[in-house]
Image (cartoon, rainbow over all chains, first blue to last red):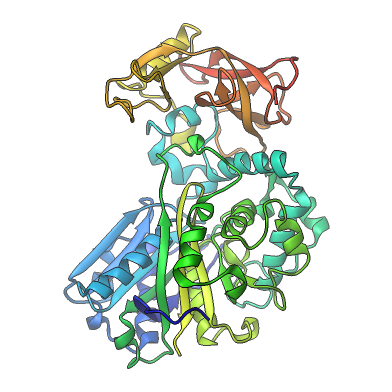
Amino acid sequence: MSDGGQAIAAVVGIGRTAYTRDPAGPRSPLSLAAEASRAAVADAGLDVADIDGVASYSMNDSATFGQVPYAIGAGELTWNLDVYAGGTGSFTSVHAAAMAVSSGVCRYALVYRSLCGRSGLRYSQGSGMASLLNHPDQVFDFASGYAVPPQWFAMWARRHQARYGTTPEDLGALAITLRAHAGRNPHAVMRDPLTLEAYLGSRMVSDPLRVYDCSLEVDGACALVVTTPERARDLAQPAVLIRGGEFTWNSGGSWNNWPDFTEMYTAKIADRFWNRFGLRPADVDVACVYDCFTYTLLVSLEGLGFYKPGEGGDYFRDGRAGYGGDVVVNPHGGLLSEGYIHGFNHHYEAVAQLRGQAGERQVDGASTAVVTAGGGPYGGALLLEAAR
Amino acid sequence: MSDLSAFQPVPDALTGPFWDGARGGRLILARCPRCRAWQHPPLEMCRACAVPLQPEAAPLWGVVYSGTVMRHPAVPLYPTPYTVVIVEVGGVGGPRIVTRVVGTDGDVAPGTRVDIAMRPLPGGDFMVPVALVSTREEVR
């Protein structure tokens, strides 16, 4: 529990679709967004007519703010935001919604992320990147066959390996832990235990990243309703307070020029984040940390100060990131094993845990959670708390 | 996928000097005439000095910052496996370029010194820089 300072907003409703890899019956991102959004509004005990703000983020692969409120029958909006972004948009959209309700430009903000990440545009196969082919920040990379996120994060991981001696077993310890967590999550797509042997024997994608180091691409949508802490008191669910967030951007479009591939955005926000709330990593019960790849998770937790550089493998192997350890990291299984909803499912999980509604995977006494979003140079972290 | 397999650069005012230079065997990068900082990918103006950047021939060698071996065929431009490295041109701290490695499809460790040459981009008449793994010892 933190110093008890003011919250800027509250999450009062959560909703989602099934997450699926089944290409047999793909639905549109709009259909998925509408289902998750209706569920979030209903969860809050609100009517769609109450929604007067909408935000989302995408890379031209989703349903826009104009489509979704129309599809669910919402009325007039007084605020909207469509963010063009990768995973960092999971922070930006929710943080912006918190500021929007806090400042009064809207009362109930719906925030969602919807994508057919499996049956539609797939980042891992380049189809999600096709619009960037001749972008000046990408064209030189494409010409050398360096085009998709697994390749980028492999490049970053290799540098960490060279500096700290990070081993395949270290990265595997993260994948294995998150899979074990997913085993208790009926919503997760990959639930069978992962052994070190199976991990090491799995297909190499880009050295040193194997297939189990990569996000699990799925079709699905997830949504939140955000309002003020005052309004939250009268709604259907126990409120989860958004204490605030910290964000960093200090790099242009080309990640290649980021000075040090052994650290990411979390290294830049850690001091600001912990000092603002008077907390240390040990004070957090649940950490939903953006894990598009195992390496992203390894170095993001490192940057936040959960362990010293190079010690992440041991931290996970020793059970400190699991139940009964220091903090439970991605109890839902994360993007690696629950599914890749572009980080937005991390908010859902944190809220479910802080409400005490996480079922078999409930973290005992969970009252404080950090939710991060981003990879590489830019991203952010939110602090969420159970309302007392 | 079809978009990616048919990939060819469309040179513009900023990227044209790079592609023109590559056809002549040169690595042309944008550089500030005032502060001498390199800028790649190119911009019109120097970020610090706000004066127009000029195309300039960069050294045809560098040091590997990091690298990875592509095994999953995400980009149908080159047959897997192939190795891609980020090279700091002219030595550690130099401007970074992305290149495919010629001479090995195995790991090329950070710190390896490489020479830079131009090779054809499949499917057209463009040339792209590649890294030649030399036998010289690692510089760090």
